[in-house]
Image (tube, chains in turn brown, green):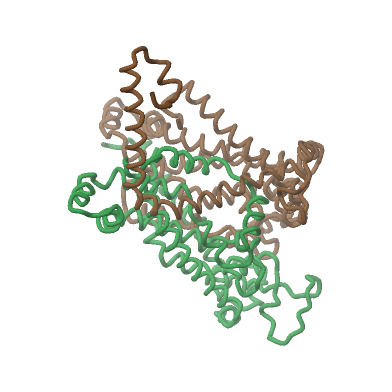
Length: 330
Length: 295
């Protein structure tokens, strides 16, 4: 009998049967090889993109080793000495790092509480309007900020909030109050961040909810009207529940990003005066790690962040799966 | 459906709200347009800027006359064009084998690709990787990493659900190779998803700044957003000084960039997006619905 894996041998009782299964295995291996060869053009098509993806997505994961080492430019990643969990200990003992974590969580939670419902509500409002050039224009206009970079928006926001010439302060001065230095104020900076984020994304955020609303069975509304339901009641009892699955999915996906905090926005809007409330994990990693060149420490912080994000995503999805399975992601 | 009086008031309220919304959305842009056509003195005055008066083109003179701005603009156009074409071509090509049932180990590859969307190495490992690949300070560093798993999945879903298998099988029976099937049968039918992902990539490249910021140090490889950032947020005015002026670095003593010039720069940088905006809307909205197919 030719040498085959122990499993197939053990499972059999008769020599004839073991011969047959050995033959079947060889056939399967031969067929696999044939399939691989037959698909050689597909391999060629697949290879470049896959390689690029592997290099730029998995390559850095190899660099995560740095989180457990003390990086030395001359020694490189492999040669640098191991320090185990020392960077993580430093991280938990560093008040600036912990401040960054605190700010990230606070800002993300505020975004969730205020920024998440906004497009849902706006979509419900859009849904109540009959189609018209007015409605379509307002929608178009509301999508525009989404396509503009934060650099430009930060510039525009600075101008709008400018103490001398900005419209907000003009109105404030009109009422007789002192102009507010929004961008450098520890009290106002975070609200500015939240509001400008809503301004940028609320319009575009309605698209996915409007798509869901378009799929709602119109007879549901008709039945409600017959029962005497007002528009508000129809919104609350029909429209809103109908898009809950989509809302759920979007919510779960945002959970994974809770430690992100919105780097592009904060990076382009913050300044040293507001680091205390505005410095998030990513901006901290940028300053300390890239500018300050503390590579291994910053890698450790980044690893911590990615891991927590992943765990959060899995946990939230598990919870949702237990309670309302149809809202879960997998 | 007849509306009650309460309902009609609600709808009226919604319309009023929509007007306010439109104004709030547009005002910041409008203010920049107004400022860009104002004189420096006018811009600094403590009033509402609703209409430029007097109208002045001095800001545009400086912006459109600046060599640095034009150069960065060209670099950006290069990046957008090459990055989009390359990214789209590779993504569309990579997605095809994944859509076929006879691609060996397909499911393993899919899992590997999906995983990259959940976890990444972070800023420092990214930087060190590109450094070790000698990509720093080249334009390639802005183009090569542009393959995103998300786009691969979107195009793959389209291939699987929108392109009939019979068509592909018929072509294969006629002797077409896998490449022929993709190139002559699948791709022509994929125009919607290709347009969507292509526009997605183009906008993302146009707005990208962070990779250019940290991976590129040569002044003549800067993209427009980096210049924007320097001028808008860091107040570096050297590029607007006449050539031959001693480059005295140090924020103290340097006059801050006039608001009018910043505004003109913003207008100039926003115009390309506004121009292709109607296209963007149509395909992007389609893209969202395509994306929800994959769920």
